[in-house]
Image 1 (cartoon, rainbow, N blue to C red):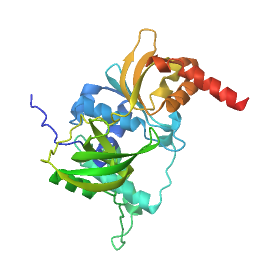
Image 2 (cartoon, rainbow, N blue to C red):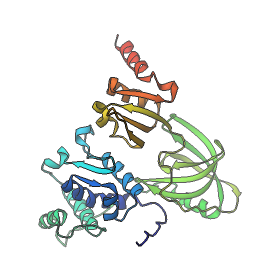
Image 3 (cartoon, rainbow, N blue to C red):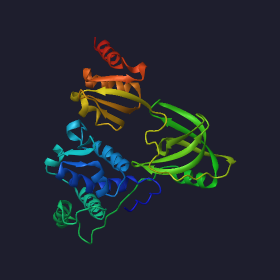
Image 4 (tube, rainbow, N blue to C red):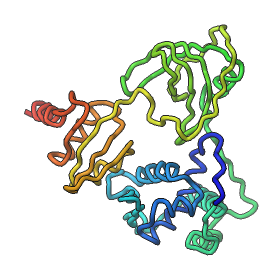
Length: 316
């Protein structure tokens, strides 16, 4: 059996979206397939496929409630998909959306495992007469992300950088001196991986949250890393919470990316989530009611009750 060639660096957001455009119609037509079979079909590792499915489960249309999200999840080693309501409504596209759909669909047909004569190919043929004529001019404008080029230069030259960084988790602006190791793109955002003097750790900083970027003049031997799929997407600043979720609240919790999931004999599920703040978790517990219990950390065991009491106090 031939071994998969190791991938250098993470797959970009565009590549993952193109893959999902192929995988989702294939999966929806089959309803339920083994995770291992699907990974083999699309030439991905099971971990890569799980990450893509988590991303797919967060996609949908406004107001982004559970019934408007793509209904795909993994159950006992099998990938399960249901046709979302948004796929059952006719689409009304403007010219830009039509062109984008055609371009992404055409790219998806070139992906491994794509059915060249399947539903996607048929749909693209139907869209072709509606596309702009050959004489039409299409302009694509991509908004640049400030400091990406500067960060790449700092990595290559081994330059220390003073930054001002905004963290939405703590809602604080902090000043740090960092030693850049790598610049990479993931899930549509650019990140700087660097040694951080404030925490004494290697951290991933989202570059669009860097508000000031100045070279300190200090240099060292460049440490250029090859970023792979093991990069911690959630970041070291996020806490985690372990929840026991009963069946009535599963759809609510599983709309968010989770770190681990373990089914229990009584039908409940133990889920570990990355939590941005206790306020966010409190709102989730309030929506889940008695169907969600916090197991860890201990200081959040009563967070649901505390949030409910705070809400009642505000309205009383």
